Structure formats: C-alpha cells, structure tokens
Image (tube, rainbow, N blue to C red):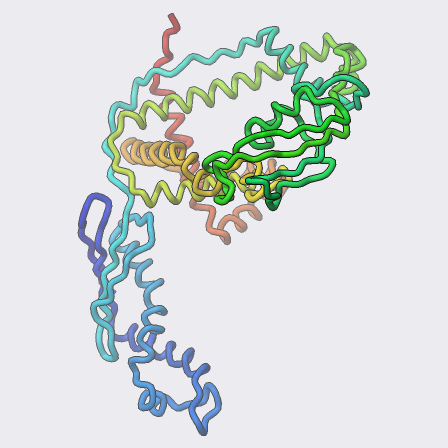
Length: 432
C-alpha cells in the first residue's frame, strides 16, 4: 500500500491511497464468505453456493462494496500513520478505482489539526499566590457546615421565606389547558434554589400553610418543549407545609459532632490550616490557568469546527455523568432549567473553544521545547493512581492499555510538564 497527501485548504488535506491487487483479492474472498451466508440459490443450502455459480448469478461486482468496507478501516489507519497527518474528523472517502485484478485507489479528504503560530510564552506575568485565611472565610465555612447539618422543622405559623422548603401541590395551565408534566402533589421545593421556572419560587415566598394562589409565569423562549416555549402559564398552587432550617449553635458540642475536636476553638484552628492548604492549591491552579490563557491568547490558530464540536460533545457527556452522580439525568435537567441540548451546547461553546485552543498551544510549546514523557514519568503516575484507586500499578497499566487510554495518560503528563515549564519561566505580577 502507498499513501501520499496534499493540502487542499487551511486545515483540509487529501490523502491519496493505492492498495495492492493481492489485498484486494483477499478482501473480495472475505466478502464472498460473508455474503454467501445470506443468499438463497435453488439447489444449494445457505453458505454452500460455489463461488463460480455465485458470480455467474450475481456478478463479482456484488462483492465490491463489502470488500471495500473490509479494506477501508485498516488501509485508512495505515495511510494516516504513514503520512503523519492528524485527523480530527471523519474522512470523506472518494473511491476512484476498485475491481477484480485491479489496485484499489481512493482519496480521503479530512480535516486535520491546525497549525499553531505561537506568540510570546516565556516571561508571562501571573498572579502571586496568597494563602492568607481571613476571619470572614472561616465564618463562611462554619456557616456552610451549619447549613449542611441543619434540621428541617415544620413551622406552624408565619409565611414562607427565602431558603425555606415549601411542600406544595401545583397544577399548570397554558391557554386554559392543563399540560403534561405540569402537575405534582406534595412536592418539596426549596425556595431560592432555582429549580422551577423563573418567577415561580419568588411568588411562593410569602404564602402560608393552607394558602392557595395562582402563580403566573412565562416559560423561557429556549424551553426544551417547543409547544410551551415563551408561553405564559398559570400554576394553581396549594401549600401543605413550610419547613425551615434550624441551624445548630456554633459551640463546643457542634465541634464534637462534626469533627474529632473537643472545642470549637480547636476546630477553628484546624479549619484555618485546611483552608490555607486549599487556598494554596486553588492559587496554584489559578496561576496555571492564567499562564496558559496568556500563552494561548498570544497564539494565532484557525480552529476547525470539528474540534470544537468534538470537545463540546465530550463536555456534554461529562456533565451528564456528573448529573447522574447527583441522582439526575439530562432530561430532568432540561425540564428544570428550561433548556434543550442545543441551548446547552451553545452555552458550552465558548469553554470548548478555549479548551481546544489551550491544548493546541500547550502541544506546540511542548514540541518547541522538546518536552516529553517517558517510562519513568508513566510509572510514577501509575503508582499515584495505584494509591488513589487501591489497585496494583501493573493492573492499572494493563487496564489502560486494553481500553486505549495509556497514550492519553502520556499526553496528559506532557501537558502538565509544559504548564510547569511555563510557570517556571513566568514572572510574578506586581500588585499595586
């Protein structure tokens, strides 16, 4: 097999492939063995039709498409490897020649990784790290812990407030007609959580137990159900109960309940230490983000749409996995947020562009500076993952090799080493 390539336009190339006659013959033979299992010829059982009779009845040409399908995956992969191009999308295949006793000629037009013209990436200014923890930050962390350990108690009198949980029935109507999914009984709704259509929760605030009210809202224009998008709706709401958070007192007993310390003062000192450690990590992450962003902003790249679409799809799947860990799924999210997949993808677009751009720049800097990852780096990373997952490093290596993720780990190691290189060659910004 031979393969050559030529640039057609910006990030579009054409790979010209020619496959030897021997491989073509072998593929046609394989196609016959596959197809003959499905054909019916009087006087012969399925799979037992002689090749000569099959070809005289159906023609050898009837095997060509299956033979092409057999050849394309392996020959295209080999052509990509031989030419050294880096496809980022599916190829557009144009078969130019295929037949018994002939070579197989085809072209594959495909979008490839773009060229990256780097700007200045050494001596970039990044923010200084500051691990100082303020009293306000300690108080905010204690309040967060109070909220997490709060008990919900039913209030007998008074109106619902922001932060309360209202147990409600609701019936929704559009143009006077009830609509699917617009009804529920004894639904617990935390007021201010943003779970419902904008304006709904604000109108429940102020209602008391036993109250009835018509809540008037409008569905967002981007609502996932097109027949409801942008339309005004009326929800008939009844409040069954109002539950309010009862925050525990910040005292020594609270410290004993939520930690291994006997006094609140000891617990606050431990919180200060842990918050400082967290800030160090957050500040370092912020410095990494800043230096990569600045290097990326200085570069010139024409990013193919296919790379942005692919990254957006990856982000969408990652978001769905995180929703599932919280007991939700995308369909429920669309209902609560009033979005659909198109709106969510559009919302993710800017981040997808940034991610693709940053990775391309880091890859080019790594090439320019000769930054690589070897077996020692890989073994060290596998040992860290071994501790994290509680499984032997060699077992993890085998798993990653089998699922094709070992190269991804190596690439990630190179990117991390490149970010470290950028930080080591950066300047700390002077705060006025």
